[in-house]
Amino acid sequence: MILVLNCGSTSIKYKLFSPKDQGEGFSLKARGYIDRLGSPRARFYHVDGEGEIDRDLQVKDHTDGLKTISPLIIQSAGGVEGVTGVSHRVVHGGDIKEGAVVIDNSVLEKIKDYTPLAPLHNPANLEGIEAASKYFPGAVQVAVFDTAFHQTMPPAAYIYALPFYLYKKHGIRRYGFHGISHGYVSQRARELLKPQSTPFRVITCHLGAGCSMAAVKDGRCLDTSMGFTPLEGLVMATRPGDIDPSIIYYLKEQLGMSLEEIYRLLNESSGLLGISGTSKDIRDLQKEAEEGRSNSALALEIFSYRVKKYIGAYGAVLGGMDALVFTAGIGENSPGVRRSICQDLEFWGIHLEEKRNSCMLGGKEGLISREDSPVQILVIPTDEEKAMVLESWKLLK
Ligand code: ADP
Image (cartoon, rainbow, N blue to C red; front, side):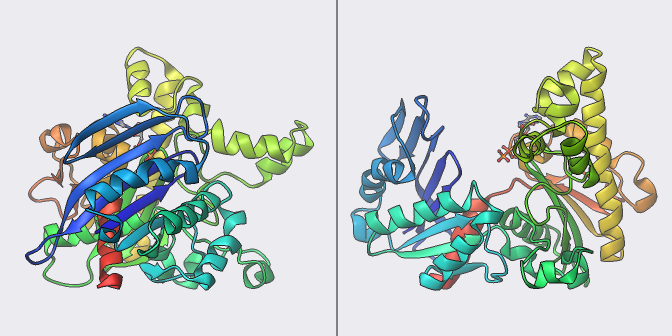
């Protein structure tokens, strides 16, 4: 069986998959999470064939968390030797191209090297790898990187117009993130639409708390909106996406803010929350906008406007488009946001079917475009764990 492990900065999520006896596919044996790791209000949820556990828990770090989880996993796997592989989601893998790699010392070094670019995530991933090696000593440890899918971008898309040595010597370039999700939904779009000819050009919109888009041609990523770090691109829950870099200089010189304060402003108090001043959640903003709160309406408008701009850019990058895919919390659940993004794009062959759009939520998958729409518009719930287990299985088999 394969344990898929996602160690975030303050959480652990996991799923245990068993390969089906007949043919391809996996069945889910157990799943769970620990939330608010390190805080006194940490919560533990686990479900398997035996039942459910849902309780408060004192867990100080990822090692401690895995110590709690591992006996339950071992029980579901019928013994520790039942877990043959552990698949770790790693946020920053730099220039590693492979979908999944066996973790050896050189891979560990790479993950460490890229820690300054993902200071909240890579250390958590490393701790998860170390703890999993301890609790599942016989299992092959595999890394699946959020950056890998974007490694097919051409230099024109990933090199910033900065002095070239910053790229050559210091690795300052666009890496892109949410790659596991973009890879999964673009592949799923291909399976659902079964294109008869090439090129098959898809624009994927991963709209959650973090948001990013990708331009994908015949399964290869040509460009993506997140950059050197996950700050660039679309408007997000608390991040601004694209801004003029001089604003940072201005905040420091004219408003006397420290770099630390600016970093926090850009990561924690901008985006939907920053504009509205009330909430980072689309549902709250929609309610407030209906009640006449103008800044909540403005936050929603700016959010959709930015996605629209990137659709235009990526249509140009791809030389046209065959499918537009929405995924993640907002993309899967908000007909209103999808409607305002697609509005007035009919000239480009994007024709939304409102009846389909309004009932496509809560994890449903399907088409939301008109029968005659040249661009097929789809909602595809992302399933990063499934994508990870498939990639890891290809490697371990
Ligand atoms: P992440 O995994 O990046 O933390 P998610 O993909 O779960 O984020 O997306 C979270 C966001 O999705 C919430 O902040 C909220 O704006 C939006 N969202 C979740 N459910 C709904 C819903 N039913 N309607 C509209 N928006 C929703």
